[in-house]
Amino acid sequence: MLSTPVSPDTPLLAVEGLRVDFRTRHGDLRAIDNVSFEIKKGEILGMVGESGAGKSLIGATLIGLLPQNARVSGGTIKFKGREIQDLRGEARRALRGRSIAMIYQDPLTSLNPLYTVGSQISDTIFMTRKVDRAEADRRAIDWLARVGLPDPERRFNSYPHEFSGGMRQRVMIAMALITKPDLLIADEPTTALDVTVQAQILELIKTMQRELGMAVILITHDLGIVSGFCDRVNVMYAGRLLEASSTNEIFYHPRHPYTKALQKSIPALQQKGGELHTIPGLPPDVSKPMPGCPFTPRCEHAVEYCGKTPIYLEAVEPGHSTACLRVLKEKLDL
Image 1 (cartoon, one colour):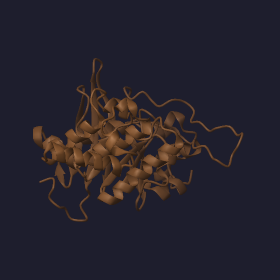
Image 2 (image 1 turned 90 degrees about the vertical axis):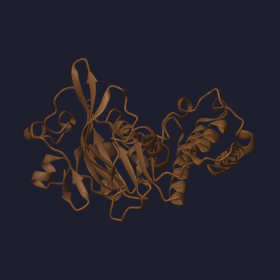
Image 3 (image 1 turned 180 degrees about the horizontal axis):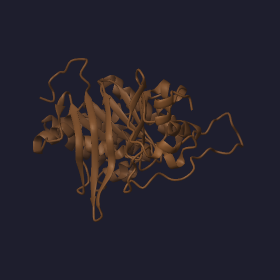
Image 4 (image 1 turned 60 degrees about the vertical axis):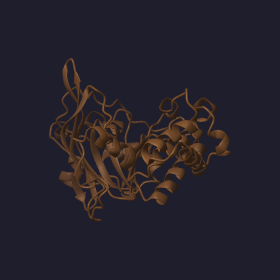
């Protein structure tokens, strides 16, 4: 059923009111709180925010790889119009391996150091495409070439430790795209890579996205990375969505103070010798109640009701939503 075509108006993925809790000895801890978003076929969505915002946890939830002490406590996750949270066994593996794929931020820990890179790619093809071993090896070499690895026949027999960080990430991209998924979740795919290699990896993902027509969710802490890459951006903080709109709107007409603070934190090439902007304070402890906006303690525009009144994403204008009470109530440009 997951391979059944859907109408152009049906989102490829629709998340509604998602809540994720962690079981602790002190009780349940809410890590994701009432998160809703959609992504259509062929679209690129950026999920940005500081470390600990819950971005990677959302990715793990979508692909069904939550830690043992975590559970979805509310909301729905629909893929091609079908609820997928209750999928188990082969149905879950088929979804994870063929329809939704994920690239992780540390390729060295994702690859088995005891096996050659080629054998790991070949095994993936062998198990998902039901071809013989010789054909799986041939396709693996072809994929190594497609993701830009030089001398793919020789690299097929190399081990992960013989590759650079950028080369290992290319291998992970190949393994993720072998099944031609409908949705790729890229979780900090350029972490620990230098700027030049970062650009190459992002360009490779975008090239393969266009070639395969898949949707991409790019998870990153760097708002600057999404500027020329994503169609839309979701801004996360303390397990909540604080702003969601097109990339242009997020960059040129941000409404939430946290989004503006993130933008100011991006170093400007034309400014030399100046002081880098930082956001004062630290993200909140999610184990403690947050009835209002979680950014209140760090927000220079906060007023008394900001920390007391429950607030989640609401449309401030067509295609642009925010969770800022001052914007929604007063319609002010902060």
